Length: 257
Image 1 (cartoon, helix red, strand yellow):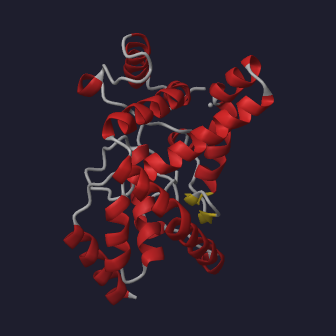
Image 2 (cartoon, rainbow, N blue to C red):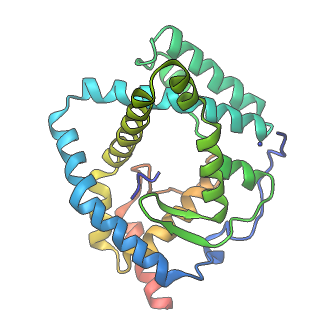
């Protein structure tokens, strides 16, 4: 579930409805919870076992290049959104990293490394920078947590991604579908592998796992929009949460309710 997964703009910090934890709008919560349980069922029965096998039996020497290739394929979309947000500094940073890793690293080695760490921008963030409200919270089947703005952004990023068009123009339809399917599956497994133990622990310690994921997703997106400027730790999907703090927040929330 955590695979899970535009032309000028003011790069200032937006203050849009639905971007703060207190303002989370979830008018279709009963439906969202059904989709959440569906996603968790697929995670427990398919994605989690496959990811566990991948982490346990595939050497890290292979997994790291796979992650580098997936990042490289997504870089054109990141650069597009950096331009659309008017953030030239981040665009130049990403373009430089892309060029170095593509030319010197042959697309599989992270030559830029910590000197130019990867940045991540998507059209949902771009819409937020433009002042578009997040809209109601959504739990999308297969895709996981989202909201109206991010769902639209996901669609735009998918259409704007040049990789499928390039592949389809230089190979058969069968190979094109194979490329897209392989990339999608590899991305899902790679994303899931980053929170393999942490998600299970979070589920075990949460009083209301759905509400926890909803809150953490909103925090994560708020932090993404501010390019990490909120100063608050974000548990998902980066594996950086403090367990005691997460539990305490859930207890406080339950007490309030």
